[in-house]
Length: 306
Ligand code: HSE
Image (cartoon, rainbow, N blue to C red):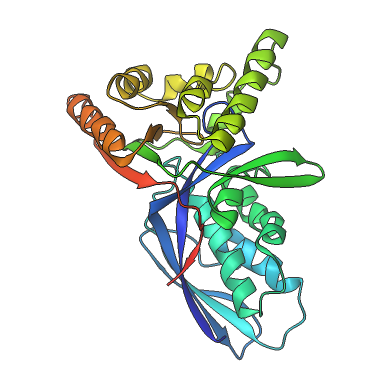
């Protein structure tokens, strides 16, 4: 293969109760990337549209992941990358992960697919590390594997794919303020009380059970974070009102998407997802901050070849 164009989707990390371990892949929002074989050896970023990002491979999230995959295989050609960013940086829906996972995926395809999607996760994490300063996989895993993923362990890395109920839709609101993941991690406390840990374990287990058994009510009850959201929500204007409104207007519940500022709601069916969108729209237009709202199905496929 000499050239490939891909769609690399946005994602929701944490999914409320699963800080750094749960992730969902989205469908209607994502970046596009083109990978092309070149005679000159190496990785070259030749075009970036939609964002001000460095072209130097070692300073660019996509460049770092691409280089890591490329360096692990002996070949006599190089690869150039064009990046069309549609996901805004610092929005909380996995902008850096779409770049990191997309580039690991694209380079792997041009190289003749030496790695499985699961094996690409650690390569994508290297790009994510450049962006956020930490090696987490809860965005890159669902982008690469599709659907819902759970990181059972980081050392050693153990990534599981969790089934997604067919009617699961997300509504996402992105208030136009920037929250840097690095900063949103710094404000977290290093310890958790036993009481909160017990509550959180119960919710993560129940969420996974609800996903396996299509139990939307159980999913709704599990969308609670007693560890991270109480601290981070102060960064997001009207967070609690958004969650209360989502539940009142037919949603299952929700939380902060990744490190914010986007907020997500999960819903049974598109109709409910649209109702949450309408209620958020009515409410947020008076808050005085510009915003975008999306409704998207959970994307079981992950990255798509266009
Ligand atoms: N789990 C990460 C966090 C996701 O919440 O900091 C953001 O990239």
